Length: 85
Image (cartoon, rainbow, N blue to C red; front, side, top):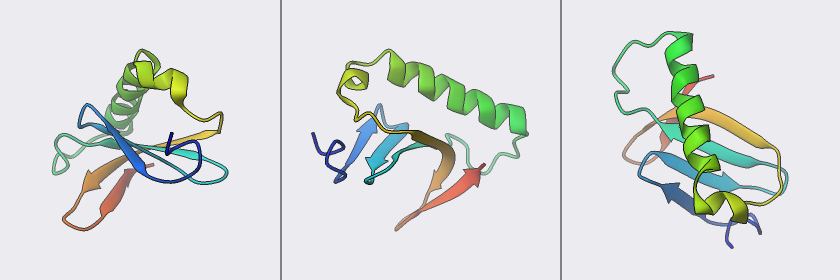
């Protein structure tokens, strides 16, 4: 799998972008309304929902055994912007 060797990007249900390097699995949740003003609790709920979705997916069993970094992002035309944390 591309994530296991630190290459490539996987998107789950159009909402979660997974990528890896040699030491971490980076899990980016796409904010469905990036222009909304959110409080910390709302960002935490977005992350929690994405984590539950990943845990219940078939992909979860194939993920590399690496520490995970979770963040909420806004997708731009050429890059993503971290919104939280």
